[in-house]
Image (cartoon, rainbow, N blue to C red):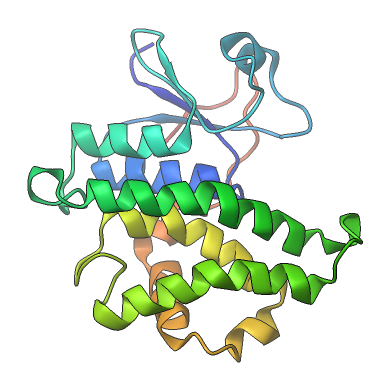
Length: 213
């Protein structure tokens, strides 16, 4: 193996997070886009978790948590200083990701699939999500981005999940009382970085042409 290999699924927010970090770092990575319903046997032998993203390093060690993967990428190369001087942005980003990946993600899944959780209405689940969105709105009233007036690791870590939230009911989101979140989200969607990461690739199979990111 000459370069690390990333197993990914482009619409997965965890994969978007990892892919954006790797892409921005400038590291040469082999990309293997997989079908979540038909995981390649090779991937299943690498990790029992049967989820993506998974990064296989050249020494055959693996990173299979997206937040760890994002941090690893920036520790190798951080050309836009997303970590900040002496990793100053990392502690606050860690706390934000803790909320995002657990309570907000759980509320988001209920909101997205409200028909599977008939105990409450879609509006009820959306309002639960809004607690986190309100927190982000307040942060963005103080800075152009979540932690500062520059893009940081926190923005990249949280953005894909907020994007997913916005798409559940786009007409509601576009008229929602969160102008700072709307502006921030649209800026990130429009970046060349995200557009490159969201490009569609053929599903990977053994013997397929190599795709690099």
